[in-house]
Image (cartoon, rainbow, N blue to C red; front, side, top):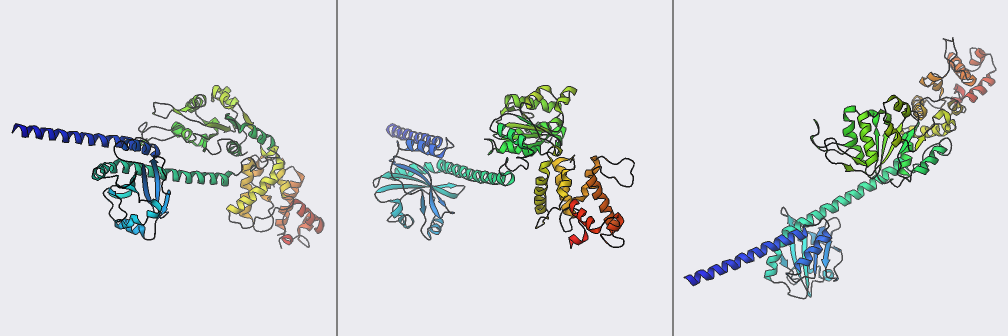
Length: 528
C-alpha cells in the first residue's frame, strides 16, 4: 500500500509540474504578444519564445478582408524565409465556404483532405511544409487566424496541437487591438485629408488671397512674409473691421505650422466666469457642471496657432494665466494639479490702445511687452482707398453667390469713384454689408450704391449746417447726385418734356443724361 501511495504521489507531482509549466507558458506568451502596441514587435517577441518550445520558421496573423475579397496578412515574424503574397484573392465562392465552416479549434493543415485550403495550394505552397492554424475569436466571432509554419513535413504532432490551443486567446486580443489601431489610423488619414482640403477651400494661398496685398496692404504683407517662418508672438493692431483675422490666417498658413490647427478665440465674446475653462480646460469635478475633463483652446491648438482676437477684453486673472503660457509654454487646467506642455504660436489682435490700458492699469504691462514683440498695424480703408474697387468687385461676386444670384450685376460708371470718396468708418466690414444690402435691393441694371449717400454710412460725413430739409455732403459731386436723385423722384423718372427733371433743374435733357451717366445714377431710358 505504501508503494502504491508513493507512486500516486509521484504522479501528482509530475502533473502539478506539468500544470505549472503550462501556466508559465501561457503567462509568458501573453506578456509577449500583449506587451507592446506595435504588433510587429509583439509578434517578433512571441516568435522568439515559441521557437524554444515548438518547431517554427514563421508566425503569421491573417484576416479575411471582405472589402478586398481576399486573405490579408496583418503582420508576421520569420527566419528570413519566403512568404506568400500579403494579399491573396479568394477564389469564387470561397467566402461562402469559409462562413459555412465552423473554425473553432486549432488544426494541422492536410491539403489532401481540406477542400478549402487545397484551393489555395498554388499560392500558399502548403505542400512540403507543415502548417498549424489557430482560429482567433472575440466573443465567439471569428476575426482571423494565427498560422504557425515549419519547414518540412509532419513537424507538428498532437502535443504541439494541444499547446497551440493556449495561443488562441492572447493572439485574438492582440489581433483585435491591431485591427482597431489600423482603423483609427485610417480615419485619421481621412480626417487629415479632409482638413487639408477644407483649408485649401477656405484659405487657399493665404498671402495671395488677401485683396490689396500688392497695393494698400503691401507693407503689411511684407511683414507677414518676414514673420511667418518664425515662432514669434505677433500682435495685430487696427480698427474694427479692417481684416485682422485674415492677416492672422496669412501668417499661420504661410508658416511651417500650416498643417496644424488654427484656433480662433474671440476674447470679448467669452463669459468672464468661463474664460479660464474655455482657454485652459478643466478637470472633471473641478466646478459644478464639470462632469468630464475638457481640453481648453490652448491644448486644442497644440502643434499649430492660437489667434486671440480682442485681447484687450481679457480680464486680469486670465491675463496672468496667459502670461504664464507665453513664458513657460505650459497650461494648467482648472482643478488640475500638473502643467501640460503645449507647442503653440500665439497671434493676438485688438482695436484698442493697449498702451493706454497699461497706463490705466487695466492691462498688464509685462503681458504687453510679451505680446508686442512684433506688432503689425493694419491700416483702415480710408488710408488705402485704392483697394476699394477690388474689394467691391470681390464682395459683389461672393455675395451674389451666397444670395443665389446667378450672374453678378455690373457696377455703374462713377459708382466706384463715389465709394472711394467715402471714409468708411466701419472699414471692410461696412463695405461688405453695403454690397450685400445693395444686392438685396437690386432690381436690375448696374449697381449704383446710391444708398451710401442717405443710409447709415453717411452718419460720419460732415453735413451742411442749418439745412434741415436734407443732409447734403460737402463734396460737390455727391451733393449733386443726392439733389438730382430727389428731383428724378419728383418727376417720377421723366427726363425731358413738361414736368420732366431737366425742366425742373433748368438744364438741357442731354446735359442731364450725360451728368446722370457720370454720377452713376440709373434712369428709365438706360434701364430699358
